[in-house]
Image (tube, rainbow, N blue to C red):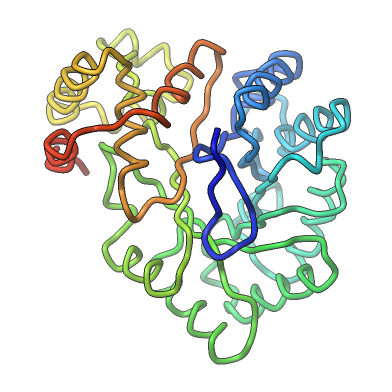
Length: 316
């Protein structure tokens, strides 16, 4: 895959980023290695993970995804060829969201140990911690940047008000500035990437990396009945967004996919790639066959009329 530059950073990434939330959850270690080999072979060189992945799987404590990625890079000897993005701040046992200096400085060392590396290319504040001043969070990130433990910083799930506050603080004080913003954004769910945040990203040259890019599988067309929903590993999410408007939207996406002899997933990702406010979508997969849609999405050219039709879908 042809590489793109991630915003104002020097990072050269694939146009699609692989979501590592499946490692240690829906994929065991052996299956994860096979998936990592497959995406590496097809040219995806950027992986998004977090210290909290995959804590929700029975018996896990968090950090399983990072551990698997670290073992794989060590076994393949390809750390220098990969762009690794991880996150801090979600509850990994401390009792809540935490972007305090103490927690950040401790968490990065734990992540580096699990990833078996001495630096992370992009380190996100996973979710805004309203109990910690942005100056403390950015100050902690500065220490990590100065020591070389991280190369760049990003913000995920920040409100426009809090993102603006952090960006303004960076301009006024010289504290490090977020280079990447990560919101939930896809054809069905767009209200989590508000117009205000889009304007902030454009004004401050923040790259935008979207998660739940395929709406946890809803946009692949694999759900057509209540039984399908109940069998999903992401039952709560898909049920939340399974409604009349969603089903109508899926029919339109399916029609467009048939016109191109491709999958609904490829159309959904191609739409994201065509959005000027999106730098790179995060995508995930549990089967190698799912990767076909990723390759097709990168080369798929939707017509202006098709993009307009998709833009007008009734979504949340």
